[in-house]
Image (tube, rainbow, N blue to C red):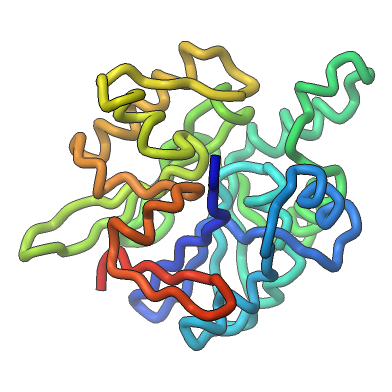
Length: 249
């Protein structure tokens, strides 16, 4: 299966907001886990942001959907950003690190180096721990999804105007990887769960909630790892194989 590692950029009211912050190839453990998962053409956030005439220094806010290495690995790369993440996502991920080796699946896909950086940011006042559903900015809110793909991930809902109507786009993180997780294999409507710390039931309940919040319109549910994003939305493909898709102008 081909998957893409994407960042969602939200611009408005003087803000440059990222949802998730990718990986940091200058961090040995981050680079190693990308290679272990056979990631190809993995690029630092500065390379992707350059395609939209921004630098990491321009980003003032980063909302973390969950603590996995490909979503939180770039924490150190945004010197002017304030970070938001669910409290239970941080605390339960930290607790999992204390478990013996036989529980390694319980700490799969997140890195101690990322959690150390997160703890430092909390102490420095650069990271806010959210306790459940909250409004972060006017038109931007988060919905917490405990014990699903991760310990307490969150989806981000953004109010936009599209075709003269107000709608909410749902930035799903890893609630679903690809369309088939939501639409079913062969579009049979049966949700498809995947690897998670929670149960298959909790995973499909989270898929169902995210899809409902998107108005059961798949174009309103934005997938982080779906390569077909660049077919669904207006997109540019660059010679270095990077893509930029515009969801709403």
